[in-house]
Image (tube, rainbow, N blue to C red; front, side):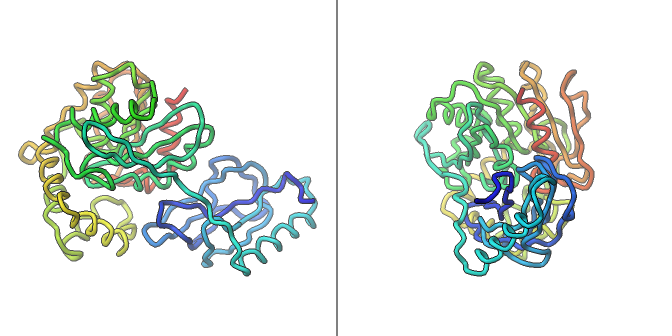
Length: 371
C-alpha cells in the first residue's frame, strides 16, 4: 500500500483548452523543502508560460519529468513527501508515475467547471474552481476574458469557491455592453452574484475590471467582503491611449502583435497562439462594436475618463492593490490615491498583466484581504 504521506505534483490545467505543458525549468531541486505556494517549476503551454506553485508541503523527493520534457495535464511530474518516508517507497512512486506517463493512461484533470447565467437580458459566461464557503469573483480587463486568471484561480481555490467571469462583450458572454458605462458592467457583477445566490463575495478586478469591481462596491457595499485591484484603471490621468486604440483597430496578426507587447514586461509572453486567440475573439460578430463603446468609457482624449479613486472614497471594505513596476498601459498610481490602510504592492519585473507574470504575488495580495 502506498504511503499516504507521498503526494503527487501533477501537470496543471491552465485554461479549458490546455492538454499538456512543457517544463522549461525546475525552480527547486530534489531534497529541498517546499510549502504551499512555493514556486516549483516554469511551464510552457501553447498559449503562455507560467509558474507552477506547490499545493503540498514536505520535501521534493523525486522529479518525474525533467526540464525540457512535456507531460499531459494530470500527469505526475514530481513527488513530495516528508523526509521520514523511505527512499524505496519514493522511488517506487516515481517509477509508477513514469510508467503511467509512458503508457498514456493519465486521467486528465477536470479543470474549471463552466456555466452561464442570465443577467439583465444578457448571458454571462463563467468558470468555477473549488467549492469552499468563501466566494471570490475574478473580473478581467478590457479585451480580456476569464482565462486571463488561469494562473491564479486554481491556487486561490484551496478551501474557497472562485468564479472567473466574462464581462458583457467579452469571452463567451453576450456581445452587448449597452452604453458601456461602469454602471452596466458593475450591475453585471452584482447580478451575477444574485443569479448564483451569493450574498457577499470578495471581488478582484484587473485594469478595467478593477474599476468595475470598485463601482460594484460603491453601488452595493453590503455585497462586497473585500476588494483587490490589479493594475486598476481610473486611479490617475495617464494611460496608454495608443495601445487601447491600436488594440481595437488591429485586424491582422501583424497589426495586433506589436500592441500586445505593451501588456507584458517579458515580450516573449506574446505567443503566436495568444495573438491568434485574440484575433479570433475580435472577429466575432458584435465584438468590435463593444470594444469601441468601451473605449469611450476608458478614454477622455488621451487621458483616463474613469475616476476609480472617487468610487473607492466611499468604500470601507479591506482593499489591496497590486501592480507591475513595468506597466506600459496604466502607470502605477501613487499610494495616497487609495487612502490610508490600503497596501499597494508593486511587483518588480512585471507588466500590466501582473496576474499572469507574477501570479504568486497577485494571489498573496488577494489573500491579504480575505480575512
